Amino acid sequence: MKNLLARLALAAALGGLLLSIQPVLAQGTAFTYQGQLQDNGSPAEGSYSLTFSLFSASSGGTAIAGPVTTNGVFVTNGLFTVTIDFGSSPFTGPTNWLQIGVESNGGGSFTSLAPRQPLTPTPYAIFASTASNVSGTISAMQLAGPLPEASLSGTYSNTVQLINAANSFSGNGSGLTNVTAATLAIPPGMALVPAGAFTMGDTLDDEGDAAPITITVSAFYMDVNLVSLAQWQSVYFWATNNAYAFDNAGIGKAPNQPVQAVNWYDCVKWCNARSQQAGLTPVYTVTVIFGSRNIQVVYESGDIDAVNVNFAANGYRLPTEAEWEKAARGGLSGQRFPWGDLITESLANYYGDASDYTYDLGPNGYNAFNSGGGTSPVGYFAANGYGLYDMAGNLYEWCWDWYGTPYGQPTTTNPTGPATGSVRVVRGASWFSYADVARCAYRSSFGVPSYGSYVGFRGVRGL
Picture (cartoon, rainbow, N blue to C red):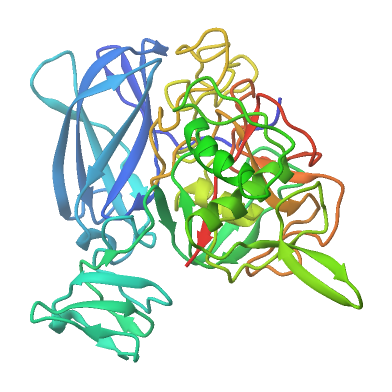
């Protein structure tokens, strides 16, 4: 069993109850908080009321937001997750401190716990529906919607036009700052993963091939779900009638379950077909020798390792390993999982083993929703901070990169992995994986012809 860092915790005796809290950093104007509630040393079960206030200091200080009360917080195997929204203003300065109270034994009053927990401000996540009080330059992003003119500053490029008296505009937002309540034109079924630097990897569990490094990626769109069987088939049948040839037809438990048993070649060709079906430019090509010339043609058939990739094309593709990990973390930093440092089968489809992993709260064995094992429907568990589902568990996910160490090759800005290799990266764990594999930093790899009931994928697009 891998070594664990000590968890930050707070505790207070409440008539036999012990509450330990694991913080999760703020996202957008809301953030999630994960806690573990124990009753006389055993995981609690049931419904509790919690209240949250934000202070300017770890003790004393000024109350700057709240209280926010959340009733009926359901606790399963001791674990609960709540969403709290204090608005945007408390997170424009230094670290703030969260004070938590719990209603003990239905007594109608809340007992405050100590010490308060620090909440470090992070860049707000930009979700699929709105960008709230964005400051800084928005680059190469298509914006539309009501924009109060007084809130705009920066350079209006020739691709941006105010189009009516309500100050709506469309076009490229490059150079604009302080855009308020701008609606983002995000493709249906996808979420925006914002550009920026993040820490790839961690030191939590002594992963030798996942040493932390600062990586910068451009903004991109990612499918919120694994590709489902129904989605796979809607493209697959079109593709096989339009010159495409696949190794595997794909399987799945039901139309709303993820497609399984597809290899890397299948997924890359399927992404090209999806692009062409949608009228977009395919990303992947192969080189064909025609006389004395080398010609690039859309990759449609065969098992070819020397695939060319055009990251500037607007079509669908597999994520790079760096893109996948940034997306999986959902804007958080230094956490084991997309939601925090603990895992339970109420949060992901994996194989529980609480006796070997102290951060696994189980229960043991296959996920309780399906005691015999197997996939769960796409979107069955809660999404992460970017609105993405199943970034831990359910199925491994193919990435573009050849597996290699260290990562961050050939550059730490938009890395694409080694130029050659023998196996490709897969990420995310599957329904029969242990908790350690489901961590954001865990790296796996498969041979490209490999397939099985444990691997699937999702698509991404550049902006």
